Every structure is written in C-alpha cells, then in structure tokens.
Length: 149
Image (cartoon, rainbow, N blue to C red; front, side, top):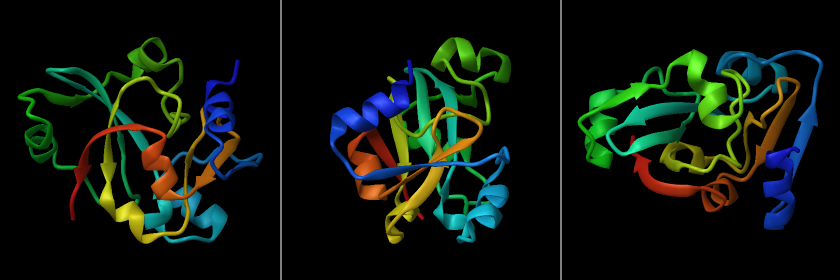
C-alpha cells in the first residue's frame, strides 16, 4: 500500500507526484533536475530524541543543522540522526526515499520553506517526487516545532 499517496488523497489538498527515472539523492540533485533553487527542496531526516523519533523537514538551503540547537527547541538532551540501517524498521522507508508526509511521528518544520509557493521532496519512492505548498505540507504533518533562520 502506498501510504504517502493515501495520506495525500484523503487530505483533499492540492499536490503533484512527479515521476522520473533518475534517483535524486540530494537537495543539489533535486534542484538541478527540476531547475529550482536549492531552498525549494525539502529533504526529510529522521532523528532519535529523548521523546522518541522525530522527522525533520528542512530547506535544502541550510548548509547544516545544529543538533544542539534543535535538541533545545524540542527540550531533548538527546538528538542524533537515526541509524541508516534502522530507518526501514522505524518508518517503512529507506534512506533517500523518506517521504514528507505519511510518517506517524512528530515533525520539526523549517520556516524557510514558507518563502516558496511550492517545495519538492521525498514521496516514499526513489523515482517519485512530491511537489506541494509548504503551508499544506505543514498542515499534513504533526508539527511540534519550527526551525528558525
């Protein structure tokens, strides 16, 4: 079952799933492929915290995430990326294919994404990208905190 497509269809929001042959492994790959700014790409990472796992949807324009700062935002002493070999067990998806919607976990959402009409990111399949308004994307997720500039 395609939980991403199911979550999108049941929400009634406007979105586009774009199929492509090339596997887009990075924000730079996505920006080049779609001819967009890197800031419009929205990679999704999974992190382990004191409160369990959280998803981070952030702008590709960020050079790095300050894990200590992010941990402080959510009130957690522990904040580390989930082990790559555990991602399928945790989410049902492999690294590089992590979807922006359909995960049943709290989300940290990057406010930088709101400057764009549409953002592009993971859809659960290597050859498919989700194009969606960042406002709708935030509504579709259980956002617990925002990453500031």
